[in-house]
Length: 229
Image 1 (cartoon, rainbow, N blue to C red):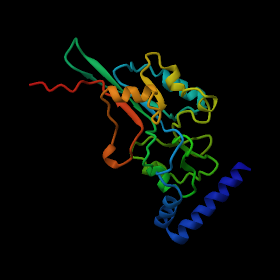
Image 2 (image 1 turned 180 degrees about the horizontal axis):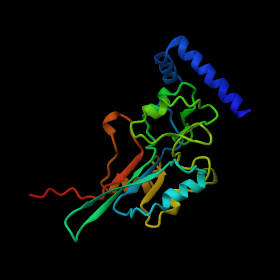
Image 3 (image 1 turned 135 degrees about the horizontal axis):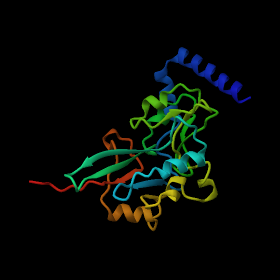
């Protein structure tokens, strides 16, 4: 039944593209799914690069919790370095995953509505049964974090464990598993939440903000910003 539904949607999508052109499809999708939806909460994540040791326990926890197949990953830890002079050298570890953008290029280009921003949580998600594998969202994502799941044949990515742990009132698997507490998850609309307190008191940055994506993955830089003369 699932395969028949996917095939129907794929054929319907292809017919529509041939009839009206992809530009009109994208415009129509933008009209029906906007980035201005007022969510009840607005979840975000902080990756503290000063605490991350690159152990990749978060990667394993994500894979196990969300049944992510081998060969693909919703989350990667990217190692760069070494920096500094021996013996005072160090490596930097950064998180590569969905940025949970408020400005959602992936949602805007999806012709079937499979990519969407949940109005209750603000989380950018994918309805796998609607996805036809056109890969428009993969091409549109400036962070290159989306992929086609080899099992579901649908676009996939991090969704803050929305359909697993979050449903049970728990924090995402990566956050719970991190041994150094390098990850902070919470609601940006709650002024008393830990994530808001950290963001207000600790210098942080986000990736590619000049593109207007308004990402909700915040980072605390591992390398200091001192100017050496």
